[in-house]
Image (tube, rainbow, N blue to C red; front, side, top):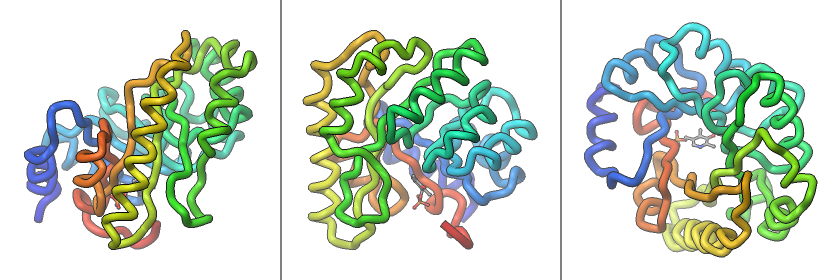
Length: 222
Ligand SMILES: *Cc1c(COP(=O)(O)O)cnc(C)c1O
C-alpha cells in the first residue's frame, strides 16, 4: 500500500473532530513529502534534532508536533517553529519551554503527558502531579506557554479491555481538570491513540491521534 492510500484509508474513518498526526520519526524527508503531496500537513517526531533538520528541508506550512520525551537542553532547537509539544511531564520542562518561547517571541502550545499505562517504561505524570502543576503560582506566571490538554499512551497489549479502560481514565481526568482552566490552561485536546489502538481511542474521546506505522510502514527501531 502507498503512503497516499494508507492516509486515505485512515482519513475516511476519522470523525470530523479528530485530527491526524502522521508520525514520521525515523522516516526520510522523501516519504514525508509523499504524505505532504497527498494533503497531510501535521507531522509528529520524537527527537528534537531530527525534527529540526526535517523542518529546515520541508515546506513551511507543515505543523510539527513533538511527541517524544523531552530533553530540556534541546528545547531551544524547536522553540521557533514547533506547533504543539505533547510530552511535557514536569514544571521544570515547562519553565524551559516558557523561557525559549519568550526568546522566540511566541506562545508555545503544550500538552501534559499523563501516565495511564501500568508498564514502568512509559513516561508521564500522575493526576495529582498534573493538578499540582496547574494550580501552582509558578505555572500561572508562565506567560508564554499554553496548555491545551492531555496526552497519554495505553499499555502495549492485545487486551482491548485494558487499553479501553486506560483511555477512559484519561478522558475522565480531562473532564475533571476543566474546572482548573486559566489564562494558560485551555483544555480542548486529548492526544491518544496510535496505529494499533486509535480506533478504540476515538471511541473513548480522543481528539488527536498519532499514527506512524499504519501510514509509513513498520520502522526499524522505536
Ligand atoms: C512512535 C509513536 C507513535 C506512533 O506509533 P505507531 O504505532 O507507529 O503508530 C505515537 N505516539 C508516540 C508518542 C510515539 O512515540
